[in-house]
Amino acid sequence: MKTVLIIAGVLLLLYVSYRTYRFATLDKGLSTEIANGAIILDVRTENEYAMGHIEGAINISLGTIRERYIELDTSKTYITCCSHGLRSVKAEAILKERGFKHIFNGGAWTDLEKIVTGQKNKK
Image 1 (cartoon, helix red, strand yellow):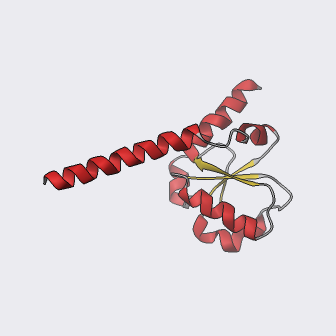
Image 2 (tube, rainbow, N blue to C red):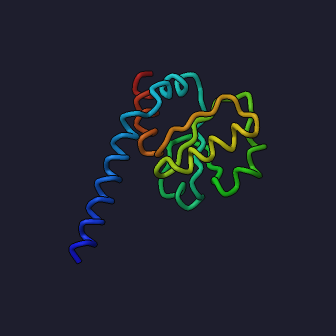
């Protein structure tokens, strides 16, 4: 039992550390991209998206991005996001492989939403 608690504690510490690091190191240029009209691309499932999302975001799940990327305009700027930032990294790579030049990873949608909201408050 003691071993299980130690492992759980270590995992929790790693997760909290990752989230803190991720938020602190989000690409500082994202606010500029958002101000310049970047489109938020939420790659979570439809059900996850329905539970909460950034206003105006487009939802194309990572599971369908290989087929549905043709719905996007390669000349536009996109910022990918998901629940924790892992799927958004994969989506960013897939889109770059398909010729997208202006694609950025925004990480967790809740963190990115803070940047988007900050931009709206500046206007």
